[in-house]
Length: 290
Image 1 (cartoon, rainbow, N blue to C red):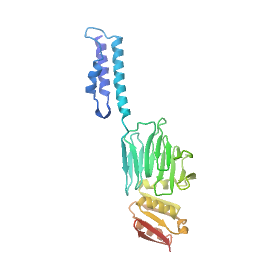
Image 2: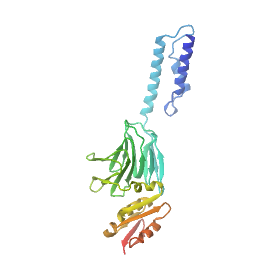
Image 3: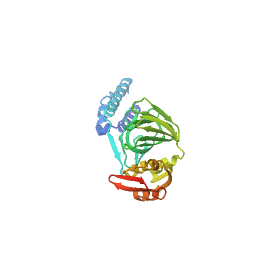
Image 4: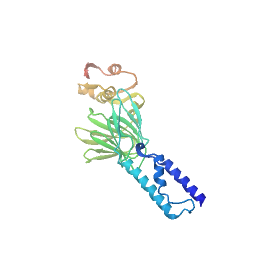
């Protein structure tokens, strides 16, 4: 019986040593006396079923107390933001989020709720860790994007007329704020939400790599209208670009720019393709046809 008692004490020591309390409110050192008081045996009496059950009940009580305190604490929110740079954040569930220029992400330090919810303002590329029991939800001002585990790019800058979600791997559900319309995407499909019309439409992405070229410091435009290029440049540099002429807005351009080129250098290159003039009227850039 002496060997059984020693074995039991070793197991108890392991349990106490592995006990971790929320935010350091408790420690293994403080927990040990609480558990040991519930052990009702003497040096000359063999270990019986009643003390074992009492100890098990005490352990369950203490661990339940720890669980209750841990899960009753409010989620601690963290805000990450960027200016004229990109930034990659690793969330507590292993999800990686790469923030685009002039973007922000609000997320809990530890996910405790049934859903893993974050709030995005701007643009980001998500590589979500799969967890079928805890859906990952990205909230924006106008839409929510719900996934289990996938890779997708979300462009939700507040000044843009449209919010664009491009799926690269897995599947996502795009839902409007009223929950009156939802859209399921397959890889290389894009959901476009029009803020003015409050409508969702689906499109196919021809070259998916162009959509996330910004994650490694490039801007790739493949037969994009000038209006779309102006939108992306506005997001990239944090400067509003206004095109005055409709014909110029619809003119399609193919071009590639690497990180390090400023807005003036890029517009001069575009001038060699399309005849236009541009001028700076703080805080905007105005483009007009020659």
